[in-house]
Image 1 (spheres, rainbow, N blue to C red):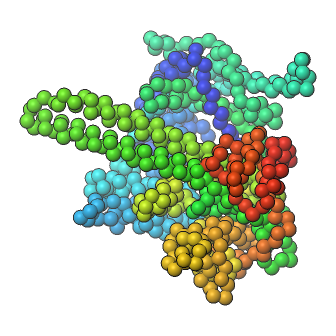
Image 2: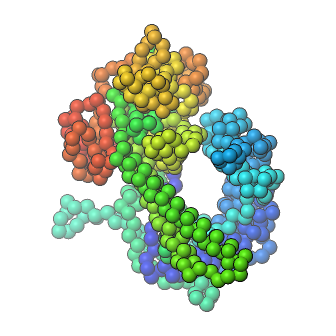
Image 3: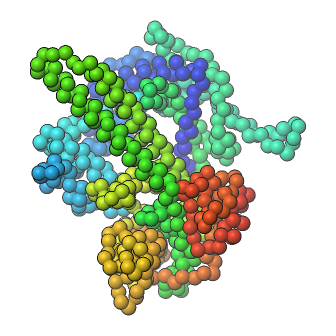
Length: 627
């Protein structure tokens, strides 16, 4: 049943013939928006009130000087400025909440070897104590971000900021972005006009071949090179992805688009139009009908580890209905680690030239001598290293985004195959690995744990689950990786399963062994954590079935609802299709994803012959249609 919806954005590059006028529009709008932000910054508290209506209606009464770009164009600029001010007003409320926590106890004093720095553990403990809702990771992240920014100001000036204005300067736009939400729509707009067309037909030569096409035409009101505003010409047809056609055929409604610019490392700019569609989503099943939970853990050796548990009516303990699955991204992790080492090397080279430039400048100023002959070459070297560093970071982030989409697709696919509508994962956004680790592996482990791929994975997973009618729930990770999944007693982790490696326990060990002599369970730490996370989800379901209340648990609580599960091989089948249309053949002892050869592999106890037979594109398409 369709009823709820979600807004999706599809970035479309504008044709070359519209680039110049679109960039002029963004430049003029950015100047006007920045002027509004500077004028309204003292009235930031006015934007912390009711926010049900458009943002431009809050800006208009407070603004006495207009840009002169036209009424609807000004409304679009006020809407963009109002959204920025609303976000900053929310952040100011967070700062006022965290103001009592800003003490010197959050700073580690300097010693002989290291300068003063932030104490991340103290910051996390203070925020955990202050946080009102433990199930809201956004509040934790917002508090942590504001406190860390205040600590950075303390390290620079020696004092904590007393007001939010002391902490945050006026958030002016550096890159142009303009929403058309303040205009009158696509057909009657006074700032933009847009026609969106989609069609479905069959070719005359081959009637069985379907033709799906979607395109748009755009016209903008922009300033010319002399500054005079006028309507431009209609653009040529801009082809849209086939996904847009699918959503439009399902009844999606087009919303006001957003125009923005993308700047490359060499300074070139490209105008992009974000086409907004309000697409239909599927209502989730009621929790009364749920009996299965998919739990996944952000692993130490693997990227994610997945297990599915089920609790039927009358069963005292849940039973495991799937074999564990490990998504091994070791090949990609190696590439990312080499890229991080390259970034560190480039930073070292850049800092060396920056030191030479600084020393040469100081010497020339003190002794009033001319600059060295290589001074200009040193400056050029610094700029070249900065460009290479930015290129490496962009490549690093692109890989993380692709990996987040891959992992989220896998989780949703396994949930659909297991007839499960509740996905539970650990909320690692509240955790931060300290230091650089010991050795190359330890440094990379901390880098990967602190990277944005975890937040990106949850963001992608949530909106995809919303569209497919699946619940995505975060659980408290405390104790999930150091608790025995059988007896729920504290357990230690070791380097490996070999007896020689069990002499000394380590915090980041890959093998978990129960400390209870009567139990003796041992297995992969990631596997145990995925079971514990799934049990927390089942405890949530059980409590809801009994009390109709939403209650969250963690492994350190004394909860009788969190009980060990019984492993059952019956029904523990893994029907995993390939991600791409051409399934990747078996290579060695692993099953690889198509397009990710020797980078990301699936490991499971299922026979590989079954994996190969079920890895078909037709099966994947049929499954998604049934979903």
